[in-house]
Structure formats: structure tokens, C-alpha cells
Image 1 (cartoon, rainbow, N blue to C red):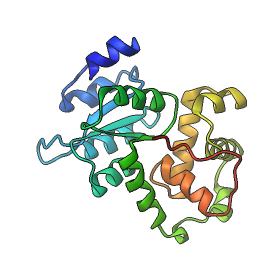
Image 2 (image 1 turned 45 degrees about the horizontal axis):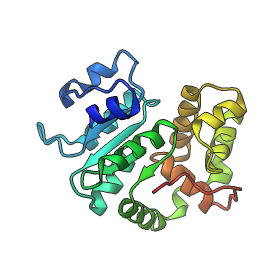
Image 3 (image 1 turned 180 degrees about the horizontal axis):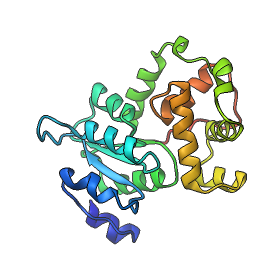
Image 4 (image 1 turned 90 degrees about the vertical axis):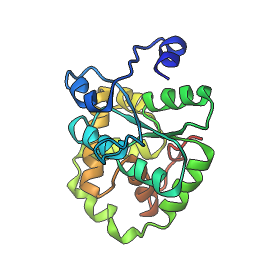
Length: 207
């Protein structure tokens, strides 16, 4: 897959051992990481590694590779902070589309994975999060960024409209998710919609 990215997307992609990933990310040059869910090294999984990577590098988007797309794996992948989930059963061309979408600040999932995700989100009780009352905990800029994201705008578009860098936009979304109790951007957008907010565009969920 690293070869396909280098060849077809003209980007610098390298394959590294999971044990070396965090060390390689420490220099701050990584713009996106792809992690296999089934590492099974020292009883740890790619989901665990993704959570750690997100905590240490919140601005770096994550794509998780699945050997099979079960309900629990898909949901846990997104809850770990992944912006994209890709099944190895899908063609390489779709993997490249996944990378393109996530690099642009969007959420990506295949058709089957999207159905599983929407089914799970639909069962989440809204009482765990109160956007109207909790929105006061957000700074003015954080609220602006969140509302733009909920209208389906990419990080690049939000950055241009608000005069920010894409890196700053990603950080605002991460902090807003923490303040509002959302595990990641997917739940953040879902909760905003569930709390009565209406938007001109749809959520960023491409399939």
C-alpha cells in the first residue's frame, strides 16, 4: 500500500513496524498514518496504537485497516480516533480514495462500514451530551469551526474561510470534541445534528 501511494499519489509513504510508529511520528513530519487493526503484538491491537497516536499527535489523521469489517471493529476503529476505516477486501483504488478524502479533512468509510457506523450512531442516547448548554464551554473560534464542519466543509475550506491553518482547524475540532464529550469528529457531527442544529449541507460521511 505504501508503494501504491508513492506511485499513484506522488507522496512520501513508508512502511514501518508498529513498534516504531510513535518514534517515527515524534519528529512532527507525519501528515497521515495508516494502522492495521490486527497487530496482535504483546496483546495490543492497532486500535490501542491509534488511541495512543491520537493522544500524542491529535492533528495527524488516522486510517485503520481491517481484515474484516465487523460491527465491533468498525465502531471501535472510529472511536479510537480514526478518520477513515478501510477493509482489505476492497480494491486498492478505493484505498487511494480513502487516503485522498482523509487528507482533505473528511471522514471515509466503505458502504458496508458506513451502514454499521450509522446504525451504531443511531442507537447512542442524546442525553450524554447537551450541545446548547455545553456550547458555552467552547471558545468563539471553536464553535465557528465546529459549525463549519457540521455543514460538510473540509478542513481546507474552513481554514480558508476563517483565516486559519489546516493544522489549527484540526486542533480546534479535537478540543471541541473533548469538551462536548464526543469520542471523535464523527460523533461530534452526529450529536450536533441530534441536538436540533440544522445545516445547509450534510455531514462529512463519504462512501
